[in-house]
Amino acid sequence: MDGDLGDMVASEPILPRLNQKFKHTHITWITNKKHFPLYENHPLVNLLVDQKYTLLSYLFQKLNPFHHYYNLHLSGFRIDEATGVSISNAKADALGIDLSNYYDQHNLLEIALKLCDLALEDAQPRIYLNEIAYYVPFEKPYWVIHTKSNAGFRDWTDENWHHLLTQLIDTWNVKIIEIGHVNPINFAHKNFISLVGQTSLPETMKIMKGASFFVGLDSGPTHLANAFMLPGLILNGEFLKFKTYMSYSGMYKNSQKVKVLFNESGKAKDLPFDAVWKELIKLNDSKSE
Image (spheres, one colour):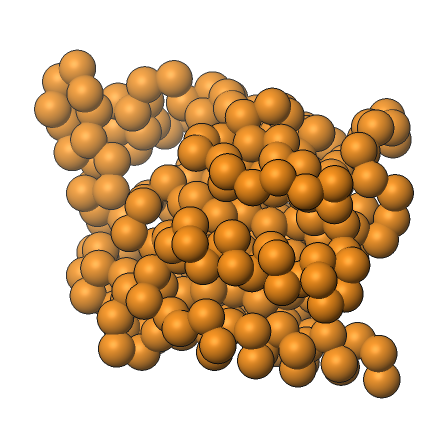
């Protein structure tokens, strides 16, 4: 059981580790049905169960029908709307991992590994897609951007995005596709298309997988970009009580082809444009070397 899209992508490396540990596993993953496409083609996931109601987490903890059951929610992360029951996680509580400190020492994968009694390690998340072709409106190479997170306080300003799109097109003549669910950027150019709210999750993933570069926020699509190992620039700022933190494992933690850029004195919206552009120039130059 998991949290949101990004948590599910980040946690993917626990699947081969659990398979190695227990051998001949039958793995059931319980999540909201809208996230099924993340694992529906995964070779190690045998069954996906819709967590239609948060209370299901509570019931599974009380009436566990599995040989091994791992809850990847932290205590208080989910509250059932109908009953007001707050979902707790005794394992996380015993480890001292809660909503106030989870980023202090660990990334999302490391938290999942600890909750599953697996050794800490750095690993690359992977997402498996089917072979059905999807028409992308631009020929390769193209870039993908994601400008709006679920939590709006992680966002950069529209004004800066407009400036960035203009600079990217004027400087490198790149073609750019915007992905996401809500609030597309109001920008018009033959090299730019916004598909915000117009593609399913499988379609969005196929668009992303074919991209040559990604620019985004600390959000679910950025974890997908990591899984597809896209070079990229991630715009970050303080989140809740965490001034800086690392969500990612694998490429987005280690590669010089990626920069996780923090505004260490405030939110992502206050990242200066010049600092972002400077990092993009460095990353683009490194691609040419």
